[in-house]
Length: 343
Image (cartoon, rainbow, N blue to C red; front, side, top):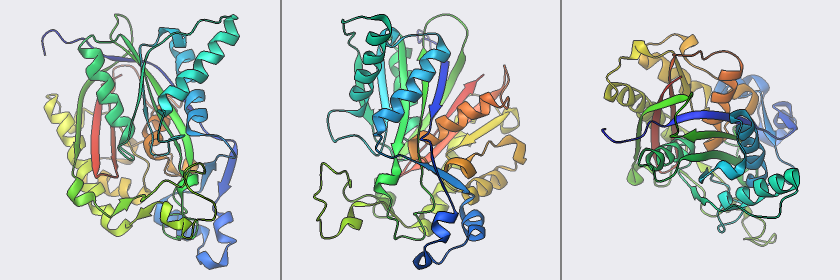
């Protein structure tokens, strides 16, 4: 559209906790009646990361600082922070504000400064599609020239809300964070060309939800039914919607930009489940080298997964200058969306 700024990705980073939880930890529990072979065949996950006492803001701060370093910027250069998370530190203040404070403390210590730079910070909750929604929101702000430079962060401590008595879901989730720096300023960068995001609260009701966050400060340890504050997922009902809606998002974001599917060099999907990813790939008729998958190492990290995968794909040389890249996600809400980037 005339008058809108071009928004580019100029920095990226991710961070995961040190503790690795391999499938063997679940196999050891006889009540789960599972095997490594079953977990890998059903989900694609071989291991995942788990926090000790870190919060979402701790992981997000580490990923954000790496993204800032990658961009050659400091936190004082940022005008806007949007954090996507389903596992916030608290209901309020926003986890984005907590990340701002931690980044500012690092900056003050590094330069022996006492002043505090203010910026707009807020959270978005869109389940596993959170980082896609946050990128679209940041893009709109920057396109309109309301702000010049933004941090978009997806960060999750999903192990804190995982029901480890639920055989179907406990094997899926892990913790981690990814971050991107966006700008509308002139210079090099990877242009965000188009976005597509949608929600449907009617079909999402009851099939993927968390009735109440099991965050220590919210609920007493002696709560009668702690598992009621954990993730509830009806996988057999989520699966067809996830496939259908991510396929829709990919096709739409490409078509609206005047491109064809064969123009796309790499698709980076939300790392929900390897069977979902494979089914989408087959429906799109693409070869395996057109999809980037790292779920075997990190599991499903919800709003962080697409950003972590994007950074790894770049680090591994899977993306080169001039490539067309599509990020796509699907999550609770139900929500889904896609982002088209010219690398």
